[in-house]
Length: 191
Image (cartoon, rainbow, N blue to C red; front, side):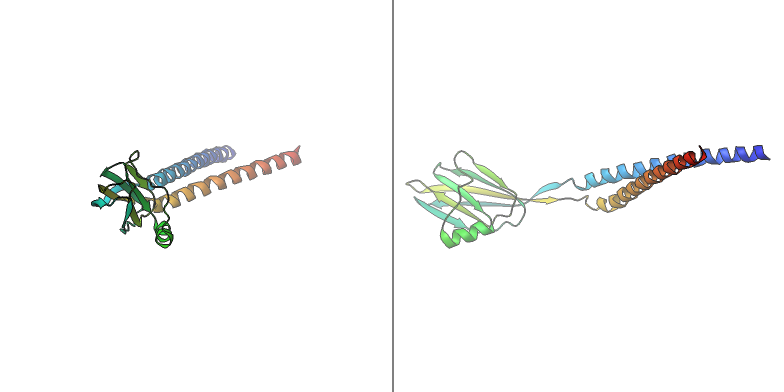
């Protein structure tokens, strides 16, 4: 009988050890899968949402204001045609209000050397400026892009996986540390 209970205890200990290893493997897998899903949820999709073309002629040594708000977060402004005396400045809402109040402009972002510029903020208005002594025609193309994360819903499933895996691994580490500490204390008392 004693032999049988010793074999049974040995079998249960090995089974418990295998279950612990399996549980740890599942926890690590859940944590890795949660992190992978979180990264996948952050991948953006950028698509062209709106295009506007502004054409005209600017009189010599003057400015033309184009009050055209683009509320999307990624804007590209390009001066497709225009002489080197034509400069384009894109303004956000704060700069637009300051320009209307005082007439002061920041340095133009688009000139003869830099024919296009990209902005990561909404554009409130465009100032087209002719610094030459003759009338100049121009063509400005504005493209607004929508940045979306279509897989963001995947993060809903990623959070419990990461949290569950992390909590199980943390509790297992604490349990193993306490078990070692208790075993060491019992060994000191016996010895």
